[in-house]
Image (cartoon, rainbow, N blue to C red):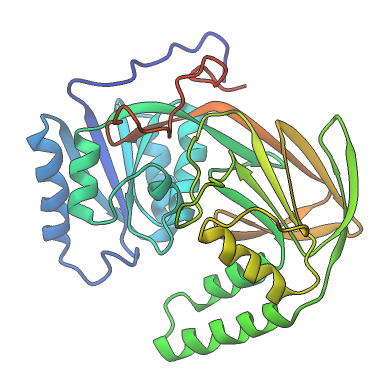
Length: 331
């Protein structure tokens, strides 16, 4: 982002909003489009905003979001899963446009971290009364992601989930069971060298997660990131000896029991390089699997993305007020 970019005010009294919905998103699939449109329009108009709502097939989402980013909208609200949100974020960062998220997917990672309700009506109402704030983005080899980037065992599950989309319930269950069994029994570890510019660590790992800001390690149910603009990548290296041991560790983390696992290594960095013994590797970024050429170059981009989010309560820590975090233009 150019150093002279003018920052928009953190909140609009009245906004001009474009809502673009993935018509194949699970939460609205099969619903009456008119009813969905009315629910969203009513919520924003009641709050005094101008809004248009559009539906798009998955293959046209990127082009529609790109076109909207060139127009005079204050916010582009996207409705879909994590893949839709990640694609929209890359466009928004390039054009310094604010985005909002209607969580219509399976996991809705960013929406949960932003405390956006999962009900369509409640989400639209919360965003309509919300505010824009800057949060960090992360990248691997120049490609943005918002939540986490995974290598090792987890991409095999994400890849299978992508292949099973749209298939019958029976085929999906059978596919999930097969990949979960394979993951649990796996002892396939990889040799990695992690260099954060200060120290190089060489180790054998079952999987590596690089999250955009750290996960909460207090006693709380679920993997959430309490702050989204601390300007740090959090690297979690699983050195467990089997997939089953790793899954148990993840289960403990979900329940808030992070401490005391000698096979889980964590450190923070602003940039890092992960080198592997292979020339290409499958990487799951926010649940979407792609093949990357190694080494993997990770970087945090403080304040790179403007998001419309529910208005913060005083005790809400998602956006830190510390002057060390970037509510400024991205690096």
